[in-house]
Amino acid sequence: MTLTLLFTPAAERDLADAIQWYESARPGLSWDFRLALDATLTRIVNHPEAYAFIAHGLRRALLSRFPYGIFYRRHEAGIQVVGILHTSREPRVWQARSH
Image (tube, rainbow, N blue to C red; front, top):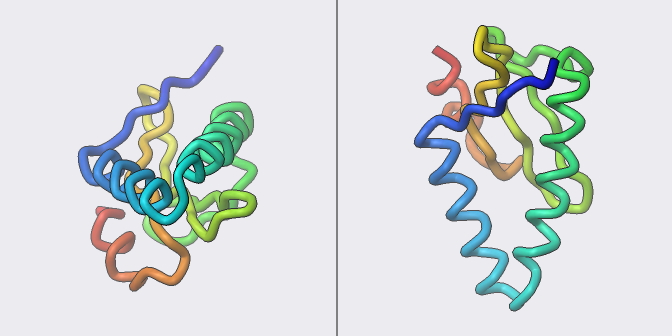
């Protein structure tokens, strides 16, 4: 059974912001970011329990090459992505989304 990825509106905004930032930093870099993101999302879907709990039922998977983490939880309908955040971001951002 393939799990469905469900993105919260906040996670969708995180993703759009990151893509915009990388594209403005260097044209084409957002493509590399998306590839790293897709690879990590595929690993999450295939092995959702592979990543350690960090708080309140949330798990975090780190992207390769980019300093971002995907914050997610297993949901009855699949995988709920609650954030795609830079690793130096204030932890209160993802902690507020864990409830």
